[in-house]
Amino acid sequence: MSRQKRGVLTSLVSLTAISLLVAGCGSSTGSTTPSAAPTNQAKDPVSLKIMGNYDSPTLSEADQKFVKSLEVKNNVKIQFDIPPITGYAERLQLMLASGSYPDLVFFPGTTDVSFQNAVKDGILLPVNAYIDKFPELKKYTYQTALDSLKVKNDGDIYGIPRTSILRNDGFWVRNDWLQNVGVTVPADGQVTIEQFEDILKKFTFNDPDKNGKNDTYGYAGYVNVQTKVFEPVLTGPFGALGWQESKNGNYKYMDSKYDTSTTSYKDALAFTAKLYKEGVFDPDSATNDDTKSRERFWRGMTGVYPGFAGHYTWHLPEIQKQTPSADLTYIWVKGADGKILNAGATGATGAWGFWAITKTSKSPLKAAELLNSWITDDTWTIVKDGYEGNDYTVKDGQKVGITPLPKDYVRTNTMRRAYDESFFIKVGTPQAIVDKIKPWLKTAVETAVVSKDLGYVPEAAKKPNYQDYKKTWDQTIMKIIMGKEPVDKFTELQSGWYKNGGDEYAKQMNDYIASLKK
Image (cartoon, rainbow, N blue to C red):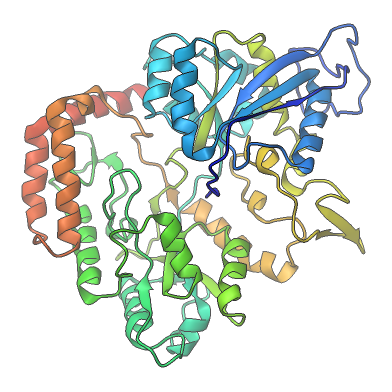
């Protein structure tokens, strides 16, 4: 899900719709196509302005063609406001403060302060009625994503999720390096914790690229972009799965980080500290963000990189620029119980951000209908594959992707379907690669566990003493991993968390989780 960051000026892209209404405002069942007979030509198209966070401020020809088809299908005229990616958060704040709002606005997550304030100030509308009205929005959205948008705990949903598949992310591994150091991984890609550590060591010390130099490292580490600290390399294999039912704790639900009745998070922390001490981390890990870490993996400096199983055709060509004979495989790490469960990626709810409808929208119903039409059956194939002659050709009855594929930031990054991992297999991908990727994607989806907090942040987290201690927490975790503090320091850290607002935090979180079950 990464984006290329470009410092470009804000651009407004207007696409004039063809005045054709193919369905009434209240219907969007997936059976209506852009070429269907109009039912109400007399009405002018409804103008909709969309503020979104896309890779480019201008629409490609491919995106323009797709958007025009949606304008026809929904009888709307769409105007995009696309700020520079690096300045999106600032532009979002300025827009909300201006009093002049688009019809649809994209928010990256429910913890975004701008979103929380916009809900509090009544700028955003509840969307429950629209989700109930349009069947695809309900069918192809995870319930957890919808629940996460009930931010006032009153049942109102304040956004339409930009869905992506909820999945368990494992690790990309240089397959050619495995062969060079004499390691064979199981056909299902599932390795034990001990096997994982062995791979990292051999990638660091056994000259896996066979260049006769001591210039490789096992793990492509990086710091969390928000906290600026390391996260444990493995959590799920040690039983740390976020907020779950606690067997022996003081609260019914607890995050294993704070649960004193289990050592799962501490064990994951100890394992990561051990790896760091052994020298298998990229030495620049403490200053790398995800992008830099990925680039060093591509350049052949590291051999194991955490990431999404659907990105094979993205990573491999970049790596082969450096080493044409390079190959990749994908692995998960099993726990002692033999399971490879892990807290799901994509915000842990299945929402990759979401679209909110503002109170000044000219037609909230049309705004919702537009998003719904993105994922109806007649449109979804185009979202995934694009257009013949533009994105692919047909040879012997098979779609063959055009190289390079045209840019499709708006078409593919506005709305997606839950549960549909096939979206991540690009049109025209050779069958041999499809056969390799599909089992990885299937496993990724089947082994994801939802953390019961759904990204919710209790009011207790906003208190000064809690916020101050959160900094202490992050700094101490970093020190433990880097060997500057002993692992046993974690027990003291947990105790301090409860004393600095953790008890109140846990109580409020338990109340929230319980409210979702009502």
